[in-house]
Image (tube, rainbow, N blue to C red; front, top):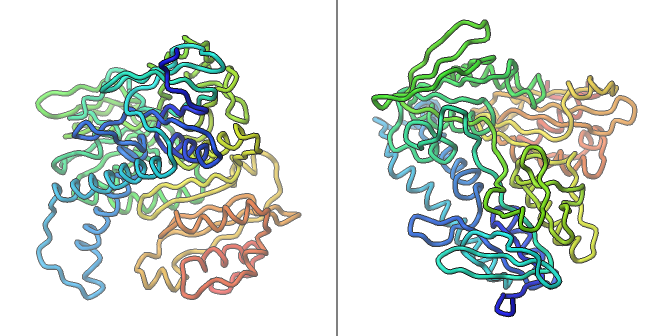
Length: 477
């Protein structure tokens, strides 16, 4: 063991949870190593995990590009901008997406170096217990052995396979293949109307695909506030997304560059659909294979996640786990908060992650964002509440933008007026939700937001007006 490189903290995985945990641990004075296996097209390191490489970042790049394309084709004329004949250069669009990804990869490598975190490009796995800690093998271009007193596992998640429909990333696509289709498919199928399915469906619909979404659940976006979900459903259907709920997927077969999906609709009637490409987005599974958890007796739960307590401690002393590989929402920002909290706990501080104020965003157009509880959750829990809504149709900035769809909704305690949830469907919802997160962290009341001066004209005025509407005193609607 004498030739093992020794560190106070070794982080396995450089996604949002891992690289942030490594940086925070280094800031706190520890010697830190971070191991990550992602490679770019040239075989070099590509830290940032699923989020940077085949998730949040490239999908937002394509959503932005496809939105520009749609505006140029359908919205510019109203603004007095005549673009003449419109042409799509998909190769350039994908190239730009790849360059955005590379900028993020390079930025993370720079940050690790700046914070004196030793980076190892390869797969990290437990080799066993070592004196005063653990031995970790790194398998990459060269093989290394590291030893650490503390280990933070941040290995993330992978797309869930649908039995009988393995990903080939040519016809049957995961999120990874969905971001790299080299020609706009005439007929695109999407199984799963979750975040990834709706975002990817939106991208390719704007670029010219006829998109059909097949969702097993009877309700659309069941985790979203019902009123907001209904509004979003109406807007997506109007845009041309064909959304089928209550589908029971049967056999999926591919031949002659086509994919055939047999399914039963909500009425139980047998249906058959033929697509040029099929995206399967039915959730994600934790990456624990190859971690060699058995070598050290690291406990997994019944679903394959690493079992942790509220503080992200695993069944082993000084082994921690964060992000998609543990319980809780599979969100990059949740992973980051857990990474920071764990680094601070290792330093003897009181790191904290508040699951009740983690914002959720779906980057469709319009965007959907929320924090806290939904109206159906409050009803189920028997909580007395007041609700206030305000439509973007009555917001001056939204009118000037030409994007007046959707609304802001506030839910507040009927007695104390404390904000219990805020739900938005509309322009820039992802940015507007931050005000609600801050307010809820400070346990603000709806009246607090209603009495704060908001810039005019701004989309944020819709937030103020929805807060005013809780007491039925909206001023502009």
